[in-house]
Image 1 (cartoon, rainbow, N blue to C red):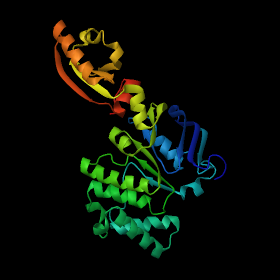
Image 2 (image 1 turned 30 degrees about the horizontal axis):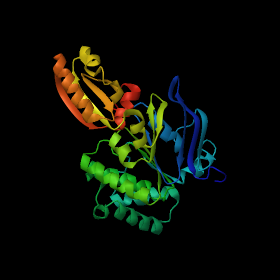
Image 3 (image 1 turned 90 degrees about the vertical axis):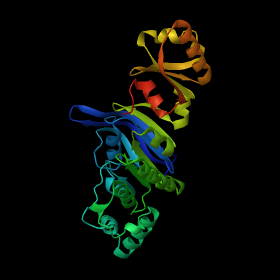
Length: 315
């Protein structure tokens, strides 16, 4: 890779993916820089997995430009794949083999000599805290252990780019946090990562930058904390209040409010003046005889950004 883009691991320009008449990815532009964790955040059906599959050469590009390591994925897929590690949505481990055997057999796909593969497998088992499970048969492992093994397997070829497609879906909170710990460690070691997720906390915990996808298009992109500040401010005030009374309730406080909208039967107010708005709303409700059945002031997050942009939640 040479020239001014040698720090760009992935460059997508006008990237399109169609399945028959259905356009899953609608002309997206983004870049992934070396050493960062780049996120594709959005609900199911947003186009995240379609983009990931095009990057690792599993699904052909319909239209647009997609370069990985400075090479065209459509013409250089074989050499590109050897430099990538992939953690798919579904675990596709061999359930009848042991944990260590899964790693050694996978190393064979990269023409790795068996003694080198054995050493590499032991390093990965130690890194993923799986050494004590080395001889265990995979089908007897918990979901969290299987997920850590799947991530470890993707590291066998020491990839320059690690693609993680919904890496913690289906895991309990404890197992999810253990996976996040290992991914943060990889990031500290300089591994470039591309992460697809619909978990806002996962994106906030791991991603340096991200794009928010909805129905195949990019709604926004940037650093997680910057997107929150840009769109929804510092705090969100959730209120349970009758639909017909919502405009009346906040009248006169417009200069304190960044935006507001409905979420089911609730109203959500985005602001940088949370306590001031909470007091204003309480006093105005009392003065007008408006009933507030529920009230909560909390920090804003990426889901608020998605909700403001789309009117929908990530789930």
